[in-house]
Amino acid sequence: MTVMSPAQASAVRLLQVAQRFSANPTSGAELRIFHLANELARHMSVTHLGFAPPGTADVPAGGGCPIEFAAVARQGSHRIIDLARGVVGRIPYPVLNYTRRSMKSALCRRLETESFDIVLLESIHLAAYLPLLRQARNRPRAIVCDWHNIESEVLSRYSDGGVRPFRRLYGRYSAQRLAAFERWFVGQCDLHIAVSERDRDTMIRQGARTPIVVIDNGVDVARFRETGPGGGPPRNRVLYVGAMDSFENSDAVTFFAAKAWPQIRRSLPGAVFTIVGRNPSREVQALASLDGIEVTGSVADVVPYYRQAIAAVVPLRVGGGTRLKILEAMAAGVPVVSTLRGAEGLLVTPGVHYLLANDQAGMHRAVVDLAGDPAKRERLAAAAGAVVRERYDWPVLGDRLAAALFALLEGRLPGNAAGE
Image 1 (cartoon, helix red, strand yellow):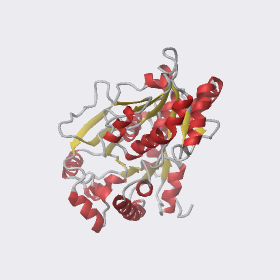
Image 2 (image 1 turned 135 degrees about the horizontal axis):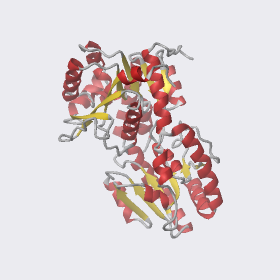
Image 3 (image 1 turned 30 degrees about the horizontal axis):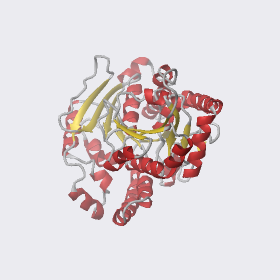
Image 4 (image 1 turned 90 degrees about the vertical axis):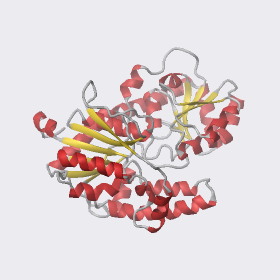
């Protein structure tokens, strides 16, 4: 897929700067960061710098790990001074929240003694490090940003959701400021990575003229295919998988539990709504007291839960980007019931690859229908599995990204005309 020889490719060095240390990924963002780094390491040398709790150990390259993972302590998240500066200053709070002296020092040390062809920033949250990268003794040949979401859109949707009036007002104001910052930022990198064609179109409308490549979110197809659904206990779970310290996930499960689940439980008395994900809030933990609901917190392996699932539900009402949880379920052979927003950005068709349900009545119908129709479950799972293997497998996405990065270094990527 590239014009570089193996020797040339192996000589390319990439520094990945991440808002989350991702050596042991547990969330959607960490999974994307880890898997793309792992796939790029087949084509080039990769070093990862990521924010982590104090005391997190580095993972040196070697010993079966093709990536050097270096942890950077992030002290004082959600500082009041950053909130205040985000209101009155030029840089919005989500960027200030990831601007720390520890990361500046780590970057300076690296760029003082090492040379990298590419620095890959994992999201606009790391935009404040651009001046340091440009002024470094060993300035990288290219600076690239991977946009996990259009962050202003996520914040705007959050403020339109069921949050308190003050947070709604602050969210709307912050979303407007962040959108203005994004319009500036789209002109600051040599290449932008979007997770969907929809996000790419948004970035072009914001004025991006530098190249944009779409690299979807993905899934480890081999893992789920090799250990996918099979024998064992009968299927009785309605499954939701996601980090429960995320507002979009906690909002989704509390909505589903309150509105759709009681009706589903009456129709399917033996069904269990299983919520799998780290750090469930007290509100989410309280759902375990309701009839037929279990909250697991973090689990060592989610595959056994998929083996017992009638369906994976994705009743998302806020958020952006594309959903790894949908791709994971599809790779595991589990049919998906999702809102339109939940499946946003994925190249999948309602009724063919998943069932669309935007309200509680639709979710009830879809889950009960799947529970009673194994043939329909198999048709949806087969169609979805084919799409996932063809487009969303991490090795496929890694090859596509590596080809784009090599083309960037060789000056072969075209830019974008405004309004294109």
